[in-house]
Image 1 (cartoon, rainbow, N blue to C red):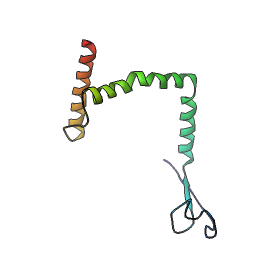
Image 2 (tube, rainbow, N blue to C red):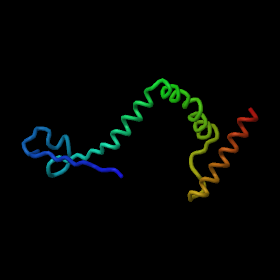
Image 3 (cartoon, rainbow, N blue to C red):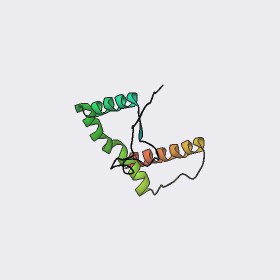
Image 4 (cartoon, one colour):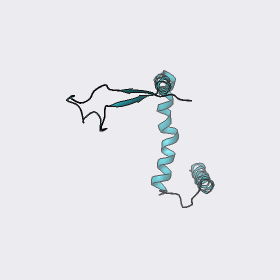
Length: 105
């Protein structure tokens, strides 16, 4: 469960930044989710370790080229079917076709 803390400015009426820093009619209100901030900090620390940097470098070789190949070279822009089950089947067929092309090359 996530909890949000709300903070509200006491008086925005004579502030020179009024209207620039927020669009609400009253005083500026912000919400802070400390648990989300903690998760973001943890993820950032993991991404910036040696292992995290190596994983991010590897991603462009592993994943992005497959999606780019399917979209650009095989002109797949949108699913023809609707619904999660049908889209999953269509994506499975695309993956099979990609794997066959990869094995044949």
